[in-house]
Length: 440
Image (cartoon, rainbow, N blue to C red; front, side):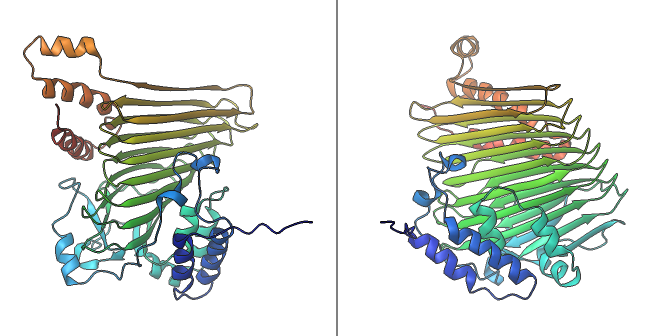
């Protein structure tokens, strides 16, 4: 006798399905959204028996879905004006408040020649190829974050850098949540860097403490041949927030890509980076610093996929864990049979400041070519007693001595940011986190 096995849906899974299915939309976007929602409905929120989500069980962590945010009214916009986690970096700003684009806080006038910026709604209405582009870069594996974001596809921004265009001024996309009631916010940023173009994209996320809101955000990248793209993201969400994000992209022949992520916020966060080498001799540097305290949980999961020859990948991630916080790093480098002469290096290092802090490192290599150089490493440790003694013996107070060592530890990752103003702003933000730390 065969019995049909039927998965029981949690309250959160049912709420997601009902809320997103009710969103209005026109073809062909509606078809794209319905497909994503079916994908989500088949498997629901990932749980610990799904290998990629073993350490971050969303089914257990997300018990309910707050109502969808209703956009930005005057009070929300006024509140958002007070929040900027990366000020004075000389950037062109694009601002979203509670998931809605706010033109009055953004600066889209006098765009550089060759730069086009449009809202996702306008791009979908005017460019018939846009739905296919959004679908084309779907990650191969099932991912509930991407599926839910696609099912909610509505608000977002499209940044298009034409062939041969060099954009000197960084473009800062700011995502701000305001208010005192929990909401769900979705957003999509699509960046298309043309051949031989150059640009710097900054993303920041901020919101209020003591509010259990949820954000789901996707940065989708298409980097053409011989292009150069820098991406910096700062996640400084409120202390009760759940932040789910993804950077998904592909780079072409001879292209260069650098990315850095600073994580200090959210009760639970997960950033996934499925990244593909779609061209020969492409180079990418992925780096990050994660600073956690209290009972924060943060997960960084990478998948770097070398499909063609001559690719170079570098990954450097530093995690500082205080109190009872928990960090997760999962990094996979895939070298496919045609990806000869690949050079891939990955390093994850964690510094435990609290006796109850926990770090889970899972670096992996899958190599199917024979003429390659690949390596990975992972370390977890405490502050060096000898260095502490050296500093204390010179009269440096305990908190200051620890701060010097901690800043030196995560500073190596922050120094990978090429733009000096952005690097200084990110370092200042990390230093502020350090200054708030209490030392017994």
